[in-house]
Length: 572
Ligand SMILES: Nc1ncnc2c1ncn2[C@@H]1O[C@H](COP(=O)(O)OP(=O)(O)OP(=O)(O)O)[C@@H](O)[C@H]1O
Ligand SMILES: [Mg+2]
Image (tube, rainbow, N blue to C red; front, top):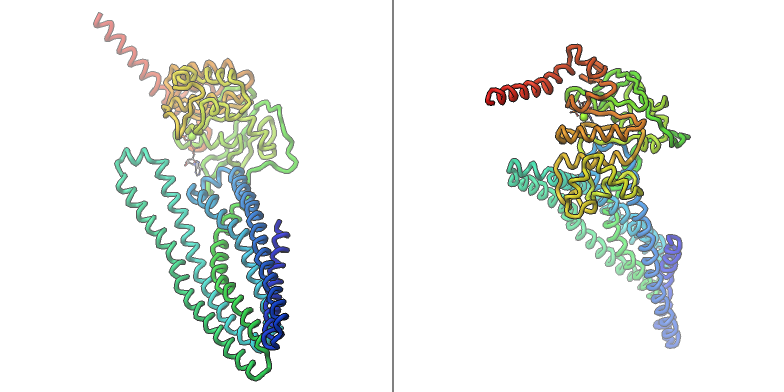
């Protein structure tokens, strides 16, 4: 299509070259020579050529639009594709407003240019070449003069482009800032209301919005100033051509027809010269967006399957940590942790907040890579796994449950869309979510999330647990997944887990003794190290974080119960 468009356009350019020459002969051989039949014949020829030129131009535009639509789809999809593949670390670093601006506005600018802009640029350059050729054929002397005027125009356009580029850059970054403020506000709207800071937020947004207006206006103002200068230059140019050409014609060194042809050529240059300013501006704008879009496309994915990794369907679920260090931005948060976890073990992990529990578990599905040491699944370094196989071997219930705005059923079946309704129901039952789902207006077909019915924190957690259970993977990670669920419901979930477990390695992170006391082994993580490990009874037998936690949670509860019983006995 692109090729066809160029071909059709070449036809129209050829017409630009030929038409003035026919006009020249209309004048010299028809009018000046007084030949009526030649006048009519040549005029008709010129008219036919002009119609042909119009048709060719239309054809070129059509092909180019078609081509552009294809390019935009491709670019959009490539950007989205990349966004899906980039690792956690990328999303830690960027803010969502920036990414949204990039994925929507910047791709639009780039694709707008690759379609319309490139064609227009090529066309403009082409027109210059064709017409200057025509001018030289008509009169070399006059061409020289016209070119001086032209050079001035190009100079103005270049300076303009240099000044306008930073303006576009500022505008783009302000656009990203505005999107960021908006998305952040929407995500945090409940906090805004809780602290009654609506007015302050409105003011802050207003200020950003005003800045955006100013930055959008800057390039427009500049253009308004550059435009009259361009017009002045073209006006003077025309006069110069008529004056100098007139002198040559009076001298008799060129004919009237040649002068007319030359003038026609010159006027055909005026439009592209003005457009040059527009194109320079567009190039500047596109360069800014292209930097951002191609910057994203070139962003290293970092965490991906190594070449030649084989797909694995039978992962057993043995996990070994060996001298593992974890660092974020060179800040060490976990140091030389080693642990061997046998297939189908249930491992409890407790420890103060910020001690590194989540970070340690995030290494198993390779959300992040260790800074030192290695994590092995079934004896094989996770970094040598086929990423897809590794991730489907791990089901994770993250600390902050996320649900899509979709039906309950689709949310639970997110990891395996082909699951039958019976399987979905079984997972919901085991996650102790069945009862409350049935109580919802449309049961499993109820739409939840942003647009749907609101759910309580514990309900959200149970839906994400059901989602993980349905996956039936070799390794299950519950990262504080029952923190908002009452102890009785949690016990029932744990019973169901044990029934389901069947050879599955399970990690349970929790702040509650009751969640981990039945685990085969409990790791106490403190300040990025494994401070202690052992079964429940063993850990209770020695002083430390675990016994303190137990004292706090269990003994106090028991004492409270005992006090209550004593009080009741006294009453009786
Ligand atoms: N993406 C990240 N970027 C930078 N630092 C991080 C990141 N994730 C965690 N950290 C830091 O690493 C340390 C351990 O965090 P981690 O989330 O592993 O703790 P945790 O034990 O899971 O805590 P909690 O019980 O509160 O969930 C913290 O100091 C935290 O600030
Ligand atoms: Mg955590």
